[in-house]
Every structure is written in C-alpha cells, then in structure tokens.
Length: 616
Image (tube, rainbow, N blue to C red; front, side, top):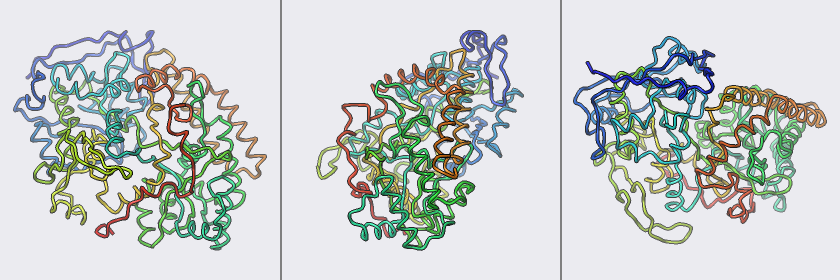
C-alpha cells in the first residue's frame, strides 16, 4: 500500500471572503472544512523522457465518469486503439455515463463523497469551475510537475490561460480546443479559414430554378430572400403547413436557427471600443425577429416548426420539405444524406442584413467541449496524470489513425515540408504534425464502414480537433459520405467565417458575486429562450415589435448589464492573452473582413468538393 503525503489546502485558496460555492444540485460546500489532497510518494518522473515510459509495471483500473448520456468511445478495450492505450499506460479505463442529462448522478456522487477517479463535464460549464474551486479536483500542473513533467511543455499558453482557476492552476484538460498555434499552422497549410459551426442551406434545385427565372434578383437581402421563398412556395405549390423556411429545433434557450441568423444579420456582440454587448438587446437583433415574424405571418414558416423536435426536423429535411434550413447542419447529417440519395441536394447560401453588411459567421474554433479532471478521490493520481499526458501527446493524438505502420504511414514527417498548391500558387508548406495516409487495406475498411476492430477516429477523449485537419491531405477529415455532406454543407461560407474563441472566455470565479452573476446570466438566457418563439409567432408585426421591446426591458431589469460589466475584465484579459485588440472582425480596422463583399447567394463555390463515387 502506498504511503502518501497529505497536503491541506488553505480555505482562502479555495473560497473567497468566506463564501461557500454552490455545487451541482444546489449543495453548498462548507468553507470551514479543509479539503485533503493526497500526493503519492512514488511514481515520480523526470523530463528526460515521456512520463508514461517511466511508470511502474503495476496495472490499474480507473473509473472515468463522463457527464453526458450520449457520450461513447470507439476505442473499447478489445479494439486496436484501446489495446494500445492500455499497453502504453497500464491503465484500464471503465467509462461511466448517466442515463439522463439532468446532473443528478454527478450531484449524488459529490454529496455522497463517492466521486470516481476522473470526472468529465462541459468545458465551459459552471460545474467544471466549481469542482475546481471547491477543492474536488487536482491542479493539473502540480500533478504534472511531480509525476508527468513531459506534459508541461505540451500545454499551450492559451489553454492554460483559459482554464486557469483562482489558485493559478488548470484543473481540467479539454477536448475540441483550438489553440492559436494550430490555427496559424492551418492557415499556412490550407490558406483558408475553418468551416463555420452552422449556417443556412437551400434546396439546390429550387434555388437554381429561381435564379434562372429571376436573373436580376438579389436574394441575399432579407426582402430579396423572402421574395425567393414566396416564389418557391407558389411555383412548387407548397402548402401553408409545409416548412418552407425551417429553423432548427427550439428548446428552453431558444433555437440555433435564430443564433445563426444573428450572425448573418451581423448583430454586434462587441462595440467599437471593444466592450461586450448583449446581442439579444441590439437593434439588429430586432431586425432578425421582425423578419422571422414576417415570414411566419406570410406562411413561409409553419407553426409546426416551434414544436418539432430534432427528430421531426431531420424527417422534414430527409424528405426535402424545407426550401431553406438554418441551424447546425452537422446535427442532421443523416437527414441531408437521405435527401441527397433522393437526388435532393442542399447547398449553403449567403445573405446579409438590409444594409448589405458582410455577414460574420463564427467558425468551429472554440475553447473546448468537455473538460476532464482528476478528483480528490483518485487512488492513483500519479498514474492517471501519465495517462492524461499520453492521450494529450502527439503520439496519443495519432491514434486517430490507428497504429503507425500497421494502419497508417507518414507521407510527410512531423515538422517536414512539401510542395502544395494553395489558391493557384504553389509553395513549400511546413506540416506541423506531418501528413498521414491510411494503408490501402485500412482505407477499404473505412469505405465499407468495417472499422469496428480499429477504435480510431474521434475516440480520444482529449481529441485535438486540429490534429486530423493538419495531418489530412485535404485539410478536413473526409472519410465517409456523411463527412463530404457535412463539408459541402458549409464550405462555400468559409470566406465569411471568423475565429470566435475570443468571446468564449471564463467569467472570473474568484469574486464574491460569481454565483449571483451566473444565476442572472442563466435567467436572462432562459428569458430569451422563453420569448423567442412567442415574438416570431406574434399575430401582427406591431405585437412582435412590442413583445421584443418588452423582453429587452425585462432582460435589463434582470441584470443583463450587470453581467456584461462583471465579464468585461475577463473578456479584456482573454483578448490580451490571444493577442487581440478586438474580438469581432468588423471592429478591427486591420481585418481583411473590410475587403470582403457578398457577390453571390451561393458564396464561394470553389471550396466545394465532388463526392467520390466510392462513397456514394
């Protein structure tokens, strides 16, 4: 049995002004009770080699709770990737997920004092912050300093800056985090932005027919787009019940469709001086809602849209019912695939506000999806941090392709260079992580979707989303029919995308009013979620206008400005860490955004890729 050193964390390092933190389920942690952290007196490693190579021979099993009912990994223990992880680290992972996503399972674990070895929650969630502040999780850098020094140089400064808690350390490692260095490498390798995270798509046959019949029309403006919808509805005899213009499904926080229209309409989220704005309260946002209300009153949007769940939305798309859809198309890949197989193709489109301002669509770039933490109940934190180190490393990321020399080979070595043609210009490009190709027999298994034995793909819970993009010869992961559908559904919007990571900052959790601000922020968000559909479905434009104005006033009375004021310092600090003066390109006088104009509703179709016959 290991002898352990016990370190008592001072309560002032965890709690501010003697205030307890609210944990999931509403439980308050008593700040008078110190939290014990146990650091094993063995398992130390040096920085001369990767930490997992310096582990003991002892094999262990850990419980890893992922607070997401739909989460699962392809890298199960009997797959090639699962076996490789165990071979390298000597750690067997028992993943646990909840049945429902109401937070009750994690709350029970906390209150009963039975947290598992590792907990994974939303990277940007209050829960992730509060677990660290409450002393439930180990500081990542401190564990790494003792037992996995090779992890420390792998932690990019922007990752550390974003996830740093009030004790000055990270308590979680994220997945799907886009580092600045990787984004710059991508721009050099591919000569373009990342895809947007959502957008608007139209039925290509209807769109082409309209443009052929109305060659002088400009459907990129709100009025022009509505005119096109009316033409399509009349020409193809679509009933009032048909979802001619379809918004993504509605929930208690609203619809992703409305969020994406805010981006198309260029609703500001930062003012010209660099201060945060509440998008919902802006005049441009009122234009969005008034336009949607007009579409609703004109029977372009059907009433069924507001009660349709994601399954119903998918069915509508699969059957080609909507002319236009706006939302997160990657959530409906199966539906767009089914439509394509019925010879109904949906293509991305570009529109602007009434003043024809160039739209700004946030890219996939963000600050993580899930964050994983080693809890104070972990029996082997020295071993788990080595596991984290391995999964976070380039070697761990390469498991995306399987096993080197068995499943894939490098066509360009890590850090090597090769000639590449970008926008008609041929130049030497440095490949940060190398360029990788599957072996022929593996590629055939991918084509036939016979990949269960491998366990590769996005199975690493610490997946770096840029790694496969930077190692793929196409700059995107295009290993399936659905992947091409996803790519082509947003590719033509690429010129209009921008890095949104500057807006994805963490509120300062060290201040006394943190919990109060978070509650106000959530209440304001839920308010707009409640009234979003009501404004759109108002019985007249005057009623919609009055309801919007009333919601703005109610939002302000609930403390929306207090939330902005509280977050401004953290926002400024985050921009500074990223080397940005402005987060919104429209405010940046040096941004290439100012040279960009909408010239076609089809966007930049040069990015479109033909789907190989082998995938059809």
